[in-house]
Image 1 (cartoon, rainbow, N blue to C red):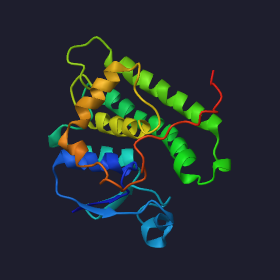
Image 2: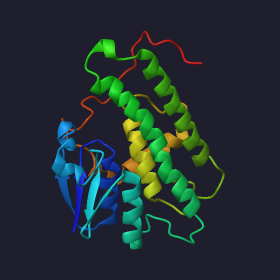
Image 3: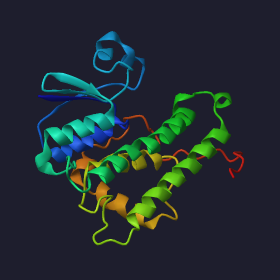
Image 4: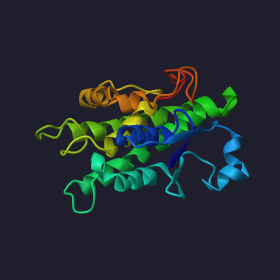
Length: 226
């Protein structure tokens, strides 16, 4: 039995997308994105009070990218991981975990735009800096996808994997704060992977989730970042 503890639109969405792609039966325990994540019963599953947490074979795991590794190793037949000895395993690990580099900048922007309710608490400078950092992440993805190798439709030469899921979901969040102008290969890759039913089934229901707007613009008064 698999149970995913999930907040719509959060990092747990990448695990939900992976579970959809794996095709194994699972249950979802929907959690609110609020202080209830720090209640004692949930802290048993996730000591830091965050999502996701995953119940699998009588054990409970937390940290989204670790969960993705565990699931790919537990269900290797779908080919979404790259196991020990696979030539693409080092690149799979690098790009899987690059998702967290993107996510940390998204988290800072989520705090600025959504978690901080008062305008005086928000920093236009922080918003500008974090968007600039996201652009550098996009540039890294663009460079990878622009590498002149045959069939470079995904992050790995060997095809679609959990690395595309993790990075793609992080970019999906990032696109609430910026765009992919100037990154044509990344935009085409995002279009490919977000057409997958597994992604579409992981999307928050309309009107739910952390992000109630499709886009959160930067304040006009934010100073330029060098």
